[in-house]
Length: 209
Image (tube, rainbow, N blue to C red; front, side, top):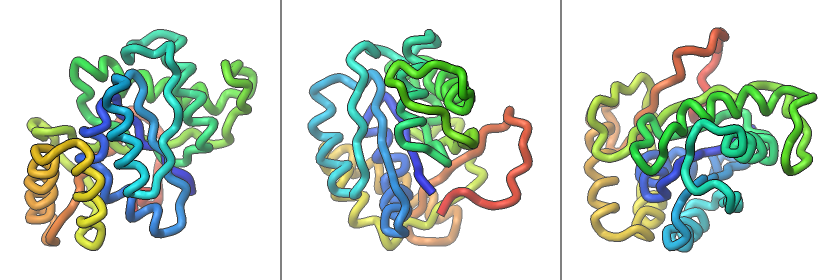
């Protein structure tokens, strides 16, 4: 199974789900990260964090400066999904100003990625199955109501080292969130997720690790 995590702000992505990505990677999954619209100065730290967790950072489309609901942006995300052959997508629940309309655009891109006659800017063929989406929280996590948790206690040191690429404040934020979600799920450190609610398909099994 391949996984693609998408966020406009690298720090938010690794704070929100680096432990889950590391756990997937250790389990033998192909794990990719895309950061559409992320400012160039943040990408160096993002590459360091990706290397720490062992995931592959996909190259940004330089035409995407901000994630808005336009075809060019949707197609760029669609190509990321097709390139990764993603079977599960992770994205931030509330992308904020920098992320614009990411949750909606990613949802549409995931659908387009499965349509054989929908032309890909990169010439990449359609994938067979529409990837379900799991949303992770972004700091400070207000108004986020988790429905699933992932125990990342064994991967906390990897997550801490990855988040350290973005500075001490990011590490402190990551620890506060991971400990709080750990208390809720009765483990030392956890990450929290919720599922999309608008896609009408029964999922008989858990996609998270």
